[in-house]
Image 1: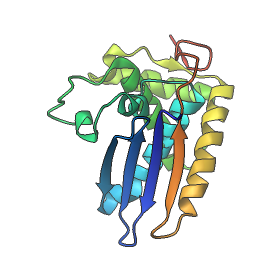
Image 2: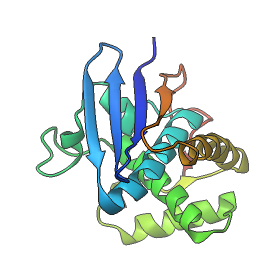
Image 3: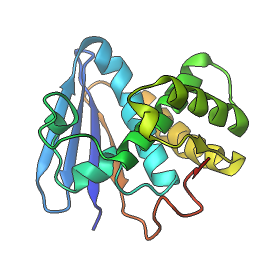
Image 4: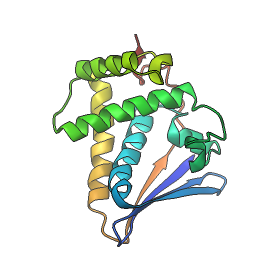
Length: 181
């Protein structure tokens, strides 16, 4: 059975909702209105692409599969600080989101440089080792993300995109995840 069923619904009023169903049947969800209804679906899809293509098991979707609720990811941080692996995933997702907004395709070297710059300038990310990417990793994430985004953009009002987050047998320290400097 899947670790998590992901359902992104496009509502007729322009909002979106994210519903996450765990293997045990429990659910957490969030309605995204206004500008967040436009921004968060692509961000959530990028999370899916990064976590599945690079083999992260304890990023956003992995933590939700483990029982985290949507409210656990924001102040007052009921579960405490976001774990290091999930913060690393968020950094990588942010890089892919920035690349998509730039309208240009970044090389693996550019991704690595942007990651190093961000980590060096951020108090929050200072505990992270800047990831170093390969062209293959970037291509894998883009392939998953671009396919899911195309499906999302083709989703009509009232429709939904369904994805499955599966646990892998590899761990992010394996060759699939970006290495640390």
